[in-house]
Length: 277
Image 1 (cartoon, helix red, strand yellow):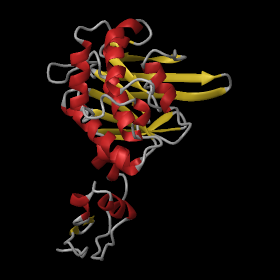
Image 2 (cartoon, rainbow, N blue to C red; image 1 turned 90 degrees about the horizontal axis):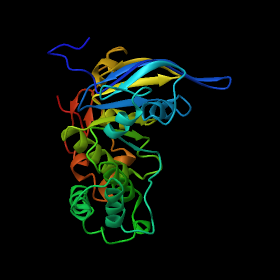
Image 3 (cartoon, one colour; image 1 turned 45 degrees about the vertical axis):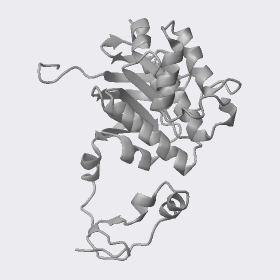
């Protein structure tokens, strides 16, 4: 129940079910997403994540249950839902013939917004793409293309954005670029519903994580709450070697800060990698 001290959730899902012929994909899904938070829907391929996002974005009708987005019923008020959201799919939907700036201007014009050029320039600056703005999108790296795709999704200032597997196929450095972009969205007040199959992505980004397995939410909580489901870790003082990710990010210049020392269950390590008390 919504009270004066507990505002209505940005997204509410209750008992959603969906089948395709004899295959039941969603089997009664329930969760709420707090406004201005990052909510990760974590699950393996085939768990039903994309199907649920398609229902919430009004692209697909549920067989049973109900869902509201920004207070609007996705079945009864699809037009209002579409005005409140933006959807970024698994693959960047940019026009590679156009430049980055031209892609943004095109979307702004399609949304009938004033000053599309100014909107494009502002988003290029916001997503660190100003220098590349005049280049064709076909020349962009995977991370740049995904950042452009998310920037295009923000035109019109939607209050809620759905990111369906946003880092699929990206290299480690590009993934970190997208993660930083998502964090900045939430800091700006945008509600983010993120679907992912990557455990580290959910751990890095989400305020709350729901695990979707075989069409059902089997756990829903903060990272700390989920970790409490397992026995406490055994504390040992060991020397920890850098991971391959540490080495890679250091060599390419993206992980110097994180590679100067690592963290173990027993405490922070010194620069030599040995645990300190």
